[in-house]
Length: 270
Image (cartoon, rainbow, N blue to C red):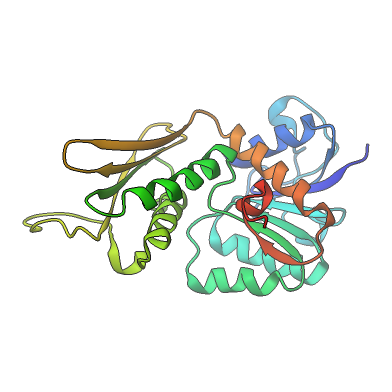
C-alpha cells in the first residue's frame, strides 16, 4: 500500500477512532502508527480492533515506536500532549496536523517555532464547512459593523473540557479582526447579576455542554428590527477527519511552515 504515511495521536479517543476509520478507508493514505498515553488500557492492541479489523498497527505509547514510519502525525489530543508530540516531530522532521484546542499563548508560540523545522497545519476546527462559515462571518461583520450586537453561542458534548470552544474563539477573532477590534479587550465570556447595558463594541459568548452534541456554533448579528444568524452544526466527527486528511494532502509538498485551513482551502491565495 502506498500514499501518505499517517500516524494518529489519541488513538483510543472518539476523534482518534474516527481518524483511524477514515484513514484506513482512504485510497491515498496509509495508517502507520497510533499513539496513546502509557497508562491506556488500549496499549499494545491493534489500532483497528474497534472496527473489527486487523490493521497490523499496534497502539504504542513510545514516540519512537508509534512514529517510526510516519510522515505526518494528526493530533486532536490535549495541549500538554500535543506539545510533547510537537517537540518530537520537529526534531525528527515529521509533519503535523494539529486540531487540538485550548493552547495558551506560550503553546501557540511553540507551534510557530516548531514550524521553522517542519510543516504544520494548525486550526481550531478542521471542518471544511466551519472554515467556509468563517469566511462568511468576515463578509457579515463588514456589513454589520454598526448598529448590530454580536453574540456567539456554542454547544458541545458533556466531555469537552475547554470553554468557549476553539472554534467559537476563532469566530470571535475573525469578527474582531474584521472590525479592527481586539477580542481580548471586547470579548465577554460571562454575565451574571446586574451587568448594566450592553457595550455595543463587545462580542458575547455563551457556552452549552450536554449529552453527545458533536458541535454547534451560531453567531447572531442582532440589530433593531432584524436579526441575522449564521450557524454551523456538526452531526458527526467524520467532517473533522475528512478535513484533516485534506490538510495532510496539502502538506505533501511542504517541508516547513505554519498553515491553517484557509491555506488548505485556498482562501489565502493571492
